[in-house]
Length: 182
Image (tube, rainbow, N blue to C red; front, top):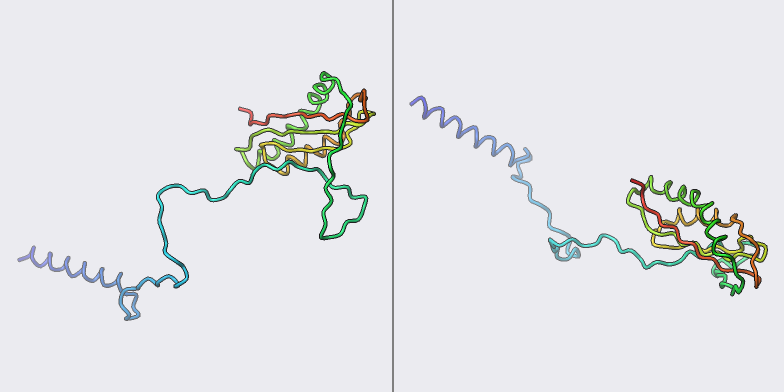
């Protein structure tokens, strides 16, 4: 009889616990989930991973626009690349790239602190004038980080090459591979 009484007490406690959790005291009974608005459509569950964002195709950086002339607000001026028919010695180009590679790496490492998965190439295309000064800079590549591109563009504008031979300018392309250091 003693065990039967203990069993009944446990059963009553379980029923009381159930009623306490199912009813919030308002007397309305258990809460009913609201139906979605009629325009919400059918919710479909898919077990396959779907991309959360789409990466656009690579577009090269066109550099900074010429700020010397006023432009209409609705119009944008884009400089067309000029034809360069001059030459520069490959060893001179390699020397300038090597001298400035630490600065380019510093631009990358600043961005790497924000995104530790950042890696790719930074392609710097320059129009070098007759005297060896950089006249035009374009930066692009698979790195796809606008802050790194802007930093490298600012640096490249101050690079100095030897004088160009055989023309008014020379076009130079320098790739930099950027990967995190182990």
